[in-house]
Length: 294
Image (cartoon, rainbow, N blue to C red):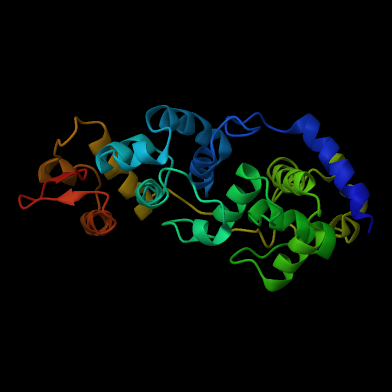
């Protein structure tokens, strides 16, 4: 397989089709890149953009976020989902501010030692913010590489040894080319090589894709990540509780009477209140009222 020709074809596609996201093309700091990556986890990019812009206007660096109140941070996170990410991001900001003098560290080992920063986020920062040669392996990239080179669907979950080995093997040696390769693969997976309805007819890698050549075995039967229903789940109830708090002045409380009106299943409501309290996202007071943390 001619990987050099593949890279050229893919990068040409990228130059025409890349999305103009505000944290791309050197328009933000490494910290801004990290914030975008944390916000983008399990969240559609179109939803992230307005939140990222507003967030960075308020807290442009780690020190500013570290000094914010948790209530303000949770409120600003809005409807991005998985609000624990907001508090982990603030915990990360405190470490960066205190231990690294407000400068995001540059090594993989230091990045992965930060609260809430795993392999993918550290690799993305190394590649997209610092221009280092490192394989970035997210859901989209895994799906593209698995289809093109292995001819099978990526199974989701943690990346396998085979997938990691493949990502490193096909990564270009030159620094700038490796960054473009990571960005292009990610964009291709997001826009064309999607989980359920890949647009193979206009894909720049179609002529080399062993998955397409094999007739796309298992397409639709084994999605790279399971479809998640939302209505009636604890996630929905937790979101309703937090929304009731976000719409009030700082330090305002929601009474138990008001809480009981938020959801019609008492046992589920109480379980969600307890889980939000355990996650540090709310405070339950002695009179059973709740508020955002100070």
